[in-house]
Each structure stands twice: as structure tokens, then as C-alpha cells.
Image (cartoon, rainbow, N blue to C red; front, side):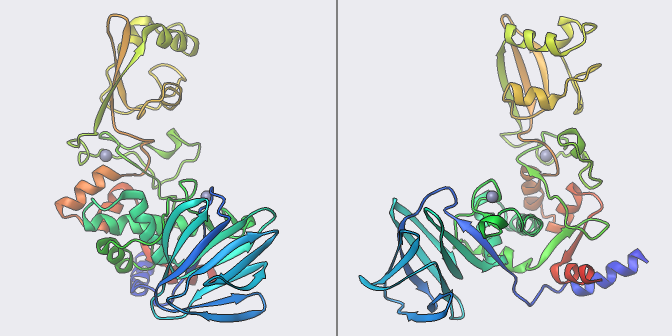
Length: 379
Ligand SMILES: [Zn+2]
Ligand SMILES: [Zn+2]
């Protein structure tokens, strides 16, 4: 039955034709009090709550300013009006625009699709309303840059899309779905890098779900150092698809290992306070591990706690005593749960496709199209 179900889903998986839109709070932590808006492609029209105000000349420069609880709009220096809320809607086939802040000076970003500007008590909020896949492309570039192989961009796009759709309520009280910072996902506006735009479009609508057809927590980290971590070893929640896997793909990378020296007394004081006294100094000053463990051997002291306390790059390390220091020799970077980015990039460079890579790091998941997800929701 399951098998039948998934072949059925597969039929659905011909990528959604229908566009999904998402609202992103941009310049989220910056208080933009005035900016210039210019059309870079397509056509735009200005709307307020009471309807269309006017079309915007593609050569015009709009100045938008926060004045005493209102959004004031001027075109080429001439006042158009003051509103609580305005919407600059792309009305051409392919629309993008630029925002250049004048207070504070110097922020400059380009965005796809539409811009909503809402006057709040002492500031205005800029909301980029855009096609989900345009957003996904922007996030992929902000999160991983332009260097990874093209196949890698596809799986990162699927991860970012899955994250976005399972977090649409995160900023709902502020009037948008997600912010543009790492709190949600880094997003610096439109990407102009073709490989990323194509990766987002070629995986249009694809998301990762678990066996109950729920969007997964698509956790990822920089590098696992040879073995990923069970979700419950870092967070309290155990998720069946976030299992520890042995990963040899990331081992050769230059960032695969790290070292850190810690003052011997500082280490000793912390560990003696946290470990049972059956563990000798010799044991906590010297430790050799062949695999990742959740706890320091024979104790309740988690490696996650040590990572936080001593600001370590990962929870996977050996300990070696030197004259007046302890030397930690570690592997990997990040929490270690889910997909290892360095390993996944290496797999992509070796010719594995995005689906093989996702299934390697997330056990027992399915990649389906959004329309299939909606279908099961309605069920
Ligand atoms: Zn956020
Ligand atoms: Zn790895």
C-alpha cells in the first residue's frame, strides 16, 4: 500500500505549476526610516488599502519615508500621498526592484516581485512579498555562497524550502512569515547567480516529508567530522530520520579537524565539579574516542555541555594532556545533526544526485511536491 501511495505521489511530482508566495520581513533588525525605490525590471504599480494609486514609471525614483505613523510617498520629489500601508506590486512578467536606504544611509538590496511597506508605531516595516522559489534562490546564495557544485544547490534549495514552509508562523504577529536573518534563514535579496536560480527552479515545489507526510526538520551543519549525531543527543526530541550516520565524504576537507588548548586548571576545575569522583584525573585529561558519544564515559556530563562551556567547534574530540594545558583534538564543525554540508558538497562533486545525498543524511524520508502535500492536508 505504502509503495502504491508513493508511486502515486511520484506522479504528482511533476513540479507545481501554481506559484506560492511568501512574506519576508526585510532589513529586519535595521530601522529603515527612508529609502529610494527604483524599478530594475518589469512594471510596477502603487496600491494603498483603498486600491490602485498609480503606475510607476520605470525610470522614476520613488522616495519613501516614515513620517509620524505614516508612509509618505514621493515621485521625483513630488508628493503622492501619506498612507498606513502601501504595496508596490510587480505587474509585468518578470519584476524586480532596488531599495537604497537614505536613513540610515547606504543599505542597498535588490528584490524579486513585490514590496509592502507598513507604518508601525515608530518605524516602518518593509515586507518582500515574493514567489517562494525566488525566495529559496536568494536564501541558498546567502547561506552557502556561489562555490558549491550545482547539484548541491538543488538539495540546499529543497532544505531551505522545507524549512520556510514549516516555519511560516514564526513572525506572524509582526505581519510576515519569516525574517531575513539567521534567526530564520539568511536572505539578502535576489540572487543573480544562474546556477542557483536554475537549481531553485529545477526543484520547484520539492519538499522533504517524513513517513506521516509531515515536513521534516531539515537540520544541517557545516561538517560532522566523520559521523553525524542523533537528534536527541543535541536536542531533546528524537526524530527517526535524524540518525547518526558514518560519513567519510567530509574527512579530507581542510576544515575537517580542529585543535584547541585550554588552561589545565580551568579544565580540571570544571570537570571535577561535573564528573563523579570515580573518574580519575588521568581519565579526563586523556581521552581517545573512535566514535561520537553523547556523554563523557561513565558520567552524565554531555559533550554538548562541554562544547557550549568551552566554545568548541564540535562535540567530537580527543583529549591530550600537555605541560600546563589540555589539548583538544577535534573533528567537524557545528552541532552534527542531519545533513553535513561539506560531506554533501563532496558527494555532489563526485556525481551523486540531490536525492541520493538527501537520503544518505536523512533516513527514510520522501521528497514530494507541494501540491501532494496540500492534497494530503485536505484529506
Ligand atoms: Zn526570524
Ligand atoms: Zn560529514
